[in-house]
Image 1 (spheres, rainbow, N blue to C red):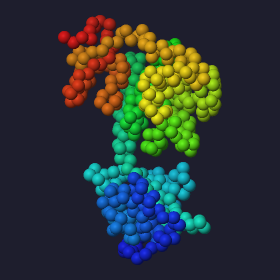
Image 2 (cartoon, rainbow, N blue to C red):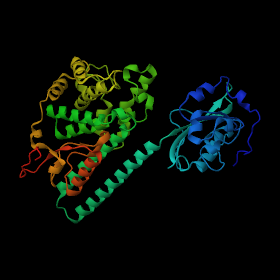
Image 3 (cartoon, helix red, strand yellow):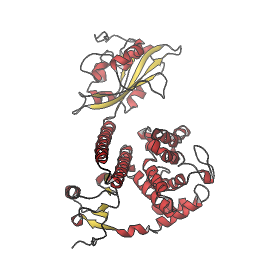
Image 4 (spheres, rainbow, N blue to C red):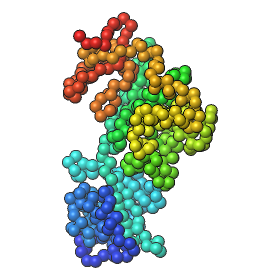
Length: 455
């Protein structure tokens, strides 16, 4: 199918396209956006379109050459299929095996695709199109919006590579276990460690869109774990709280950058309504994973208040899962300091005092007591077996006691990794490339006697 490829510099039907002048809207948008009329003639081509394509509005408006934005040959775009009324007929041909209709806005189609000719190394784009109708409901044009999702896609590919690598490791381990049943306990421990590592990597990827929140979920998870230990929760319940802390913001993955950057206290009523759905969305994302059912429940209930004034289910008191009550304090303590809840970033002592004032109202008194003891430095006796060493003091067989965090606040190695010569050499190489001197918390075998002072 073609678009009558001769440029049309004659006046188009744009005067009937919209009653209001959209120029200000188009030019004010930082997102590449263009519109065509019922004759497939470009009526609007904003500055962002010019920047991503190198094609100016002067040479594009009044023509049917909008295909040049994405392709080196003439072919219909989503807006053309909408205007011609052939989208249901041709979308399978032009966009096979790609996302289709938007579940949010009726009549809008959303596609993701890779374009190797854009930029130096190609770009992933998300582009959506909607019909423009006159008051009688007749389609008089269409609008298409593009968004660069290259960074997100690269992150997804990295996660998939990590997942594939993990699957290969699990398959290899399973094959070995079929041949010999010895070492079954060690194998299970390694699988659990790999699972937690994958969760931590995914948690990092969620936070990549908001640099100011890098490391937030990990800090929430660690604080929640320490409070759970202080309250003598079982190992499994403590583990669930920790994983829920890593994933507590998963329901925000569809939020816009603008919404992520807006503190809750500054949100409009409409935005707040969307925001309050994130615990439910988080639960829904995890529900297909049977082993994550209890964790999904904690994520759903993390915004409930002890006095019943929270959301989404208005639970109160002991009806709120204990892990969710812990998660509420841990996340609020962090969010008060990073500007997520209130416009100003509070100091740690200010955030602590606000938590204390919420006792028996927003927070469970027992959880507040454990939180206060953790913040005041009452530590777990198990920490006495951990020692902080310089990289030159590391030896094979030592176990990472705390997550090893590199530059940009991202995870290098998760706790419980057993060090070998290769990993030690890698850590030392990173240390040298960054020009910093690192100290690492490890658990050492009982027979070893290593001090934290380097001679």
